[in-house]
Image (cartoon, rainbow, N blue to C red; front, side, top):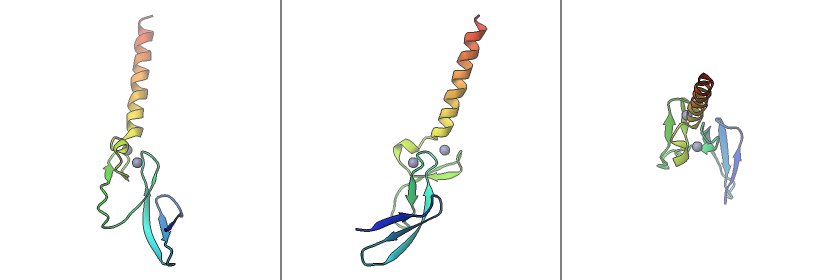
Length: 89
Ligand SMILES: [Zn+2]
Ligand SMILES: [Zn+2]
């Protein structure tokens, strides 16, 4: 059982295993779920990349779509609805 110490998001993570060995891994934060991911070279983990956030994503199903961007669109549509409702008056 290893202990995972995350020093900071988007920076550096250190995994300490029971044998006392220290593995150092790069980490990054998924821009969509804010989850800290540990980069494991050669693990074969499929990750995505969001060109809108210009950052790698964790690759989870929920994180494939750019959520911050979708929220922006929702807000824009609501504003349009409000404008249309006011035009009717
Ligand atoms: Zn994510
Ligand atoms: Zn994004």
